[in-house]
Image (cartoon, rainbow, N blue to C red):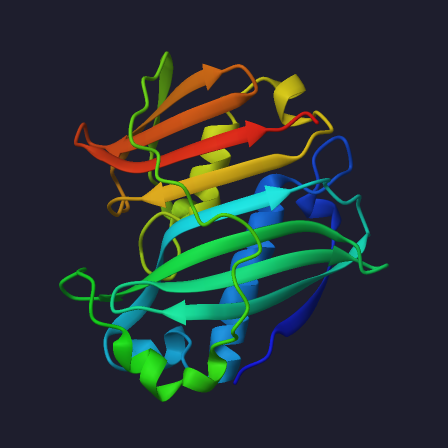
Length: 244
């Protein structure tokens, strides 16, 4: 039976906005870096998968941040895998400040792809060979929600360039999030309110494609749909600020 792993972080100057608090994208990046580091340490990271021409890809993610920590703040991210399926694995996270108070949580679902065919492969073997990595603790919040329809009221175009691409040679998750958030008003982005982000990846976007980023605002929520080269949706997402 596995145990949660704990990784320590500090909010660095390049990770904050002009309010001197960590951006949602920088916290999301720390969460995904934790996933990669933990998988590497447990023997099923991308280095091992690449040797078999496979890799991990993020399928869905939900992040909840109750408050954004300030610059130079120390915090920790705990991570654990709660289940393996044939198609998706669920990895969870909690974020706590230096005093041990939880201020965020996330649930991610991962698929494994063949790097040549770019199609999903059966990942049941990971669960069999690394069953000691599974921790019998449920996700800390609701699993990622599917966003089925978005009716954009406005859109922008973005050409995928070198700096958008990650190790899988498709657009990096945080670049998608930055493209979407850049479409929103500053007062919405910088308000002090708990926020939840759900993002669902439907297909890859690659170098050289022209993306259309569509936004639909609904009060304290924003829905997004990103498509590549005029085709069907590649990414859908929703950001929701909660006022208690």
